[in-house]
Image (cartoon, rainbow, N blue to C red; front, side):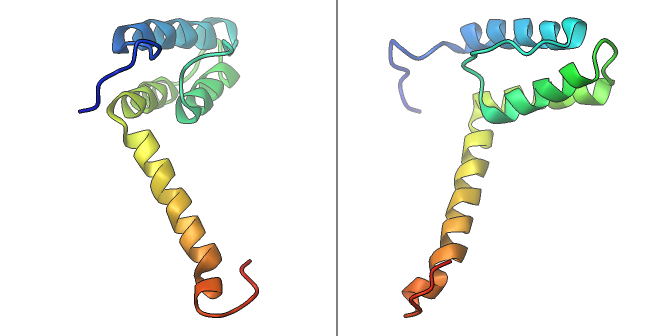
Length: 102
């Protein structure tokens, strides 16, 4: 496990920020910006805000799941896999000798 630098927020700080953002999205249809939350969490919070003042439990659960994915690194890992898959697909013709790489 890598050590957190002094400039990086703690899990507790991120949890406080997420809780405030979720409350604002649910009750006021507001997205708090800027945040230190990732794009998956921001997108999930935007869906909650769009459905405010009465977002479905599924939207709230999706936002909570996105936040859990941010904390455990699975959001970042998925984004990296998607980026690598895109790059592999895009440049596969280039590696095989084609000059048109996409």
